[in-house]
Length: 594
Image (tube, rainbow, N blue to C red; front, side, top):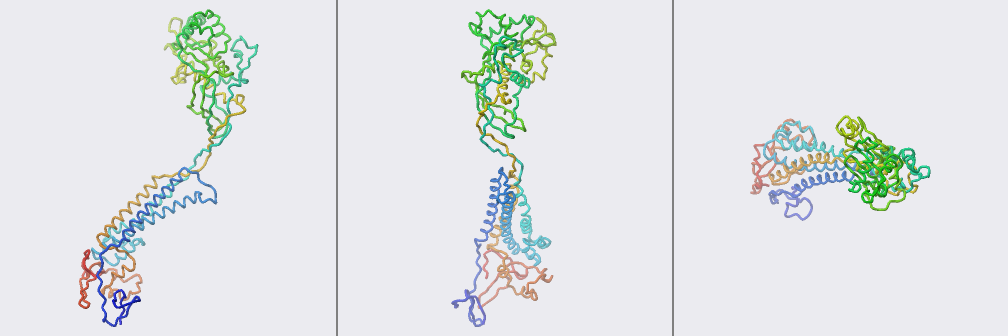
């Protein structure tokens, strides 16, 4: 009695095997089915795309961390250590999926090559073990017969190399983050001039070089410091490493080209000033006009000598206007209420104004106290400048304490004399001094100085309002943040993905050549090694213990169609399997076999 599978026994009704007396019952022979099972290509492609998806997920995960602050809480799963662990997990998953897809492709290619040529069993051993045993690469038979397989196997071993880089694409770098905080910041009260101006009967019509027409020594020093530095004076830091913006209105001068009626008056004042200069050309002239000068272009004004004596050489009147002659240019400078939008930045313990800042002149009426700003500017500018011999002379004006005088033209000569080489000698204004003007005109420099003076009041505590100004202060806080180098991750994964795609292409091509889907599980080996010659060859080695005899290792086998046809109950059967080259012939796709 023998046993046959019930599926082959038409008389069986249950169980896995059915007893048959001898050969009384013969199972119907089953022909092989040439068919590519959908699972094989699906696994290859699905594993490949899953690996690509994991790589993309890794990218978006790191991108979500880029620029964020590193958590330092030990119990938080968002700490740097955990984020790096998550990244390593993404890299490991990507590598595993890509290696799996390449492995599946390699399995299909192995069977393609085993059908084409006879290969030593030692070479077959190395081929089947190449994915898991690096010593397989020392087999010459493997290299000789499975060149593409060697490449695919090598790719699976080298796949971890490119995926070592992605976790390192996320680093931690020191940075500064901005923390917005609502605060009350310092603000100047431009209408409170108690610290800037003191008016009493003792300073009326007295030499302005002595007491500055009521301008306090403090404001005089601040004016001098602003003019000489050509910059806005810095203030003490309000909050270290911070910045904030304030909106406010304050007095400044706006200078425009003087109209003809004003130009006429300026020329008249300049002519009456010439006797003082020894009839030398007046290069610079500035004064605050009297009301009568504004009527009929000053044609009815007949007190120019007295004005020159009282204004340029002595006391001045408080006025919202300054008229200026600078060489051949004439300016009418008016005190105006100006809207400012200024940002303050702190560096170390010093706070400065961020350039450029915005300002806008308005036509609104001047507030009480604004005239003090005009008086301080008048005290600095009023007077005259002309060239004499190898230098220049200034009368009353303090313009030479600033860079403004460098905007005056020089005559290109080494000296100046009345009627000969009029103007300021070249050596009187050095190239370095001229550079301080930055190519600006006298009118523009006066406007800039006026704004600098206005903003320099922030540098003195005594000018600040006790109420301050409510705004948002952006405080720079030092922190460690994540920095993501997307290029490193993209290049590393691109190499791994392209290599896996090439392997999958080889695997899909092998499926088409083979006509069926193969693999390396035990069932595949069992079904392909049913051969009497192999039974005889392996006698004494049925335990499958290693190593096997060298005679077995050197035996060359080929996977093909058996040349000998069996005859069972009149049925001719040719089977497929491993055999000696003399026993099998090349297996053609879709040939009939059992």
